[in-house]
Picture 1: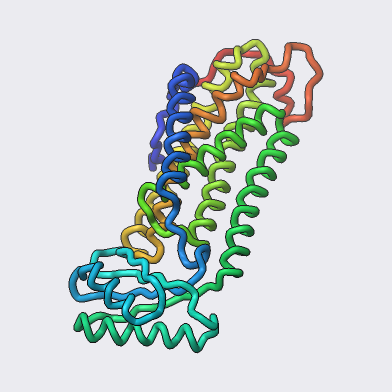
Picture 2: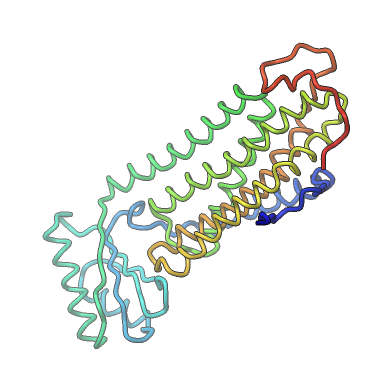
Length: 324
């Protein structure tokens, strides 16, 4: 039985040749992502904003102004409305109720449910969630801390595992991936909650996994082909790991695609973030992280230099010609 190969064995793409364009595109997209995040902001969910969120489904797309007017007259606070998943489903976000206890929250939910059912026949109450302002502040702090510590830990690991250039290039690539994710959520205004923080950490994990595989192959080839230029070593290493990168990305995208279409609107933001992360993580591994090593001055070990621990004695091998 013939094995499926998405990338031919003799693939020899000159990725480094496009590094100037890649760096320019990366800088442009990063600035756009920052601009979008600052200008439009993120649509924080109740997890981060605090307050009460009610999900209501109508028989047909409702007039949002009419829904808002109906909720505002109940005296439960100023309402913020947003379509959720489909035009018939609306999320109603309200401030923390006076007293902040479960009784006040249940009373507010009951008021909204009764009023909307009376004004919009067939309206169906789906669910509600509530978070206090103090808890939401702690969640924001812990979420940011988790992401920052993950990025720093990964950078330190790359520095001690390889060379300082690998650590710097890895951190730059991961920051790029994070900015792309934030810009995407600022553009689409998908709800940004704890599920998305989990997605961001998962994206970091996938991205670093791909980068470490490529970096490890680059280090091996630096010892194997001591006379080869760094540009050739990086191209060779990326081409050698390309089949694994493509196969991993495709299989994950198949699973995420099924989750996107069949998982329901609750998981749509999480799945969209993961799909975006696969694309930007693969791009940054190939065009940003690897090519940046040249700019940072990484060089292959000189012939006859002291060999560092490696695998299978490849440190002392001479160049016998590039592999395709």
